[in-house]
Amino acid sequence: MKKFFLLIVFMFYSLSAFAFYQDLTMGDRIKLAEAYYLVGTNYNQIKKNSGNSYISMAYKIYPELDPKSISSDTSSLPENIDPEKIIADIREEETTRVMISYRFKRMVRAFLAKDMKSTMLFFDSAVYVSAEKKYYQNSEIESSVSASIKNAPFSLMEPENLYNLDAITIVKAPLSFQKIYPKSYILKVTSNVNFGSAIPFWTQEQSFYYRSVNEKFLIFGIGDIDNTEVIAEYAKSEGLNQDIKAQLLEAMDAFLQKNPDKVSSYLADTIRIIPMETSISKAEAKLSFEGFFEQLNVDGSLKAQDIVTSQGIEVDHADVLYLDLPQGTREAKLTIKDEYKDILPFWSSYTKYYFFPVQGVWKIIAIS
View 1 (cartoon, helix red, strand yellow):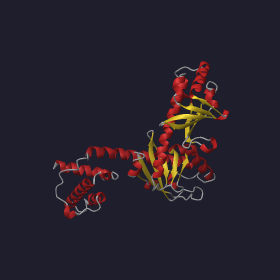
View 2 (cartoon, helix red, strand yellow):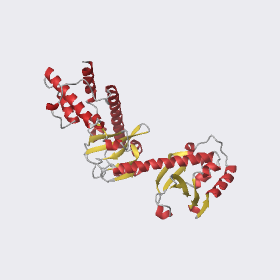
View 3 (cartoon, rainbow, N blue to C red):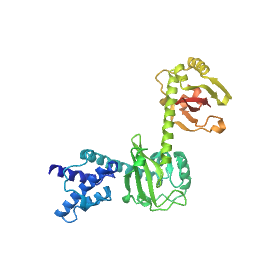
View 4 (cartoon, rainbow, N blue to C red):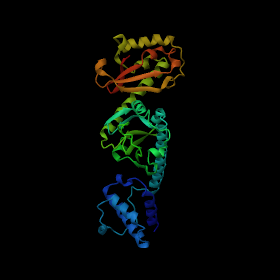
């Protein structure tokens, strides 16, 4: 009886979970579907139609369920299902949905105020637009949409005028997305206004794909995305970009610590100095650093993160044809704060660092 009661409690909470059963083996899905069906029929015997939601869930879990083949034993759940964990996960899911809904409404309010800088704070650094089948940088969307809505009559509009906010649905993204971004969700909403002539990707039924970035949920996709390959490829590229940023920051820290050996370790054997149309060896670069460090007036407490601007380091594919660099080279653009430009003139003059993998490690092969 106790196990049967636990099963009912478990089902009560799990009805609100999104496809929690998708990760189960087919055998466990069948067992779970049968358990739902039995509890549903039991409830219907006590009170008419009171168990229909359980029976409906049974067929969602396993559409080919055959009631005639079901045993009457409801004493156990599949071994890999922990009711307490499921309940905790559901509570976390509900909190996440509330958070995403709140951020979406704040984003809409900023949009209606034509404050695109604030609007774009709710978007990832790059966003995949399904209708265009391509990624756009955050800044590209900002400038494009700003121009499109410049004369739009938003002054009297509230968020609920723009969207049917009472009908927002938020679900976990399919497993194919979860493999790329483990905490990803889809917000679906209906627009009350047609801006299709001004904003090309505007449709009545809209989907926004969110992922967790530093404990904030940001929009990384717009529209119904039916192909995750491009998302996976971008995520892989983004991961490489993060590695390159980390490499450059580490090299900068070594520079600030006046450590020529360590700085040189981030360089390829030969480095092109593009503005001077010349190349130097790693050994020559090390000698240059040693001379420069004698004049460098900084102490060891200053860190690279302290001197870069809020934009930090921007990494993208290098223009390899124009610069005559190897295919696959990445460009890391560095911008330091104004107050450090006189102290660190090297990083004011040389702001672009070109990385290429050497024996599996990203190294600086050129600077400009």
